[in-house]
Length: 136
Image (cartoon, rainbow, N blue to C red; front, side, top):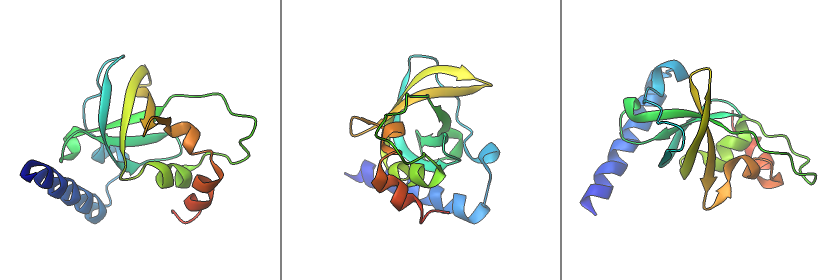
């Protein structure tokens, strides 16, 4: 219990630091990318755009790993385009699991899941699109 509280306090502190510094992606997500096939788990502490997010593997930014969501085929029923707001609504501050599928331009490409569902697919849901309109 104490360990979980300590980790939570560290993550809250890291999020506060992020808000105070206004740092950009190049200076915030500084963790080393794991190799292809590796799986990472942690809270999403930054959403960079509709395709990229940072998964916290620890409390400090040198333990935050930036990943790009792997492409998935569009469902015919999806009429809502994924955008940064919908990714924020779905993933920000949520614990996700990402399996590294490859790499492009030095950035790991991953399939990420939240409660067993694809994060990419969840961003195309009408509720995520609507909730995402409130995010800047």
